[in-house]
Amino acid sequence: MDGGHQGWVVFGPFRALRGGDLERAVGVDTPVRDGVTATVLEEMPNALYRVELENKQQVLAHPVGTVKRNFVRLRPGDRVQVELWPHDFTRGRIVGIGGAGSKPAAAS
Image (cartoon, rainbow, N blue to C red; front, side):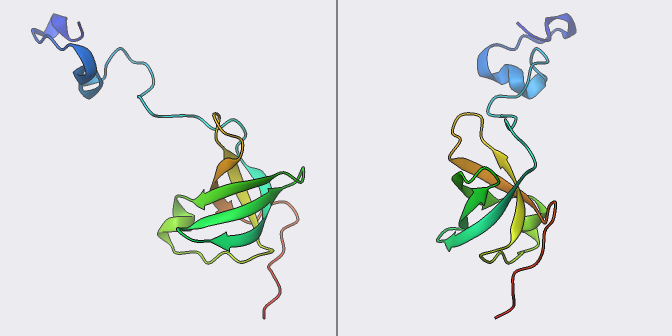
């Protein structure tokens, strides 16, 4: 029972609408490794990209934030910053462009 001190009784899933018990929101996952530098290998349908991390591991990643909002065009060879999901290390989010030692892909 949340908010009982204010005269309102809120049960179950509606607790989240009132701030709940001050725990993290449902469905919000923090990344395991954020800001990992990767190289774009391939552009795939539905705004997915196959990227290779610095440790040679390949993951599927989708753009978020300013990369998605500003319609940034990513091409093979571009360096990007990737956050990995805590539940599946083969998926990630592209959160930025560039990185340590980044250089733009050759124009063709």
